[in-house]
Image (cartoon, rainbow, N blue to C red; front, side, top):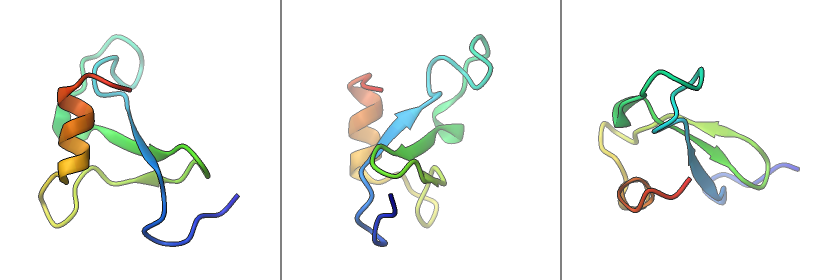
Length: 62
């Protein structure tokens, strides 16, 4: 299923568990994947984390 631009619902992946499961991935290399269509997004917009990204990370939700 395709989402319209700016209408993706992202979740944070491989922030704590790391890409291969055992390497810790820092916040700067976190990935965000849309839960509706699976589209991945780069970690930052214009060099800054969005408020939503930081909220997801600081609360520890994946």
